[in-house]
Image (cartoon, rainbow, N blue to C red; front, side):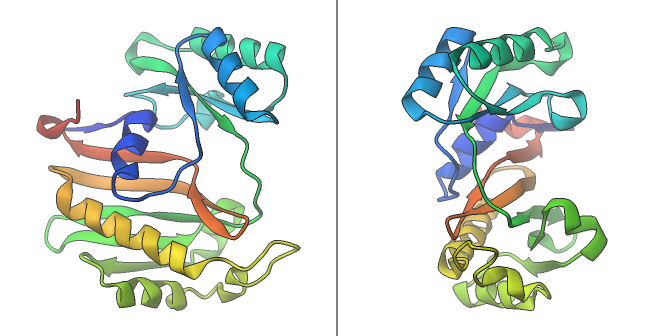
Length: 220
């Protein structure tokens, strides 16, 4: 048997290996969400968080571009009200909205024969149409991480793009190496999914994360 950690637990685990995420808070009620939004300012993203919620968008459990205390409070309560008993909901994740035109996917898949493999590729709306993905066996050397990046066909997306700066390839290599390290140190790991990894001001930021492990190795 396997289990998928909540988004909050997945991010906490992976941040220890150097994966970069936006500042966020797990709100247990509207007051918590409003207080965090006041600290950040600007539009916010809110998502219901729980151990058994893997596909939030399909159920309308993601609210984007929420502005103002009243809207944040209402959004948080609506998400909490939408929770089902089987979701095992722990609260609502709230974070500032990230702005970027380029999205990638990254992760780990553990093959029963070859062991952990690191995956990186084009994400967003063009991911299925273009299918530009590269895979390497873990552990990665830094050279391997750069080789993965240079193997993508969509090289033009790494340069300056529609007013955004060029991608920090060193930071992308750091991300791939962090995933490689996690693959060797997380007990019972089955998979890691970072989707999307958005390029914000030239740097990669993972906006969502899910870690799947064998049931016996659940992180408390």
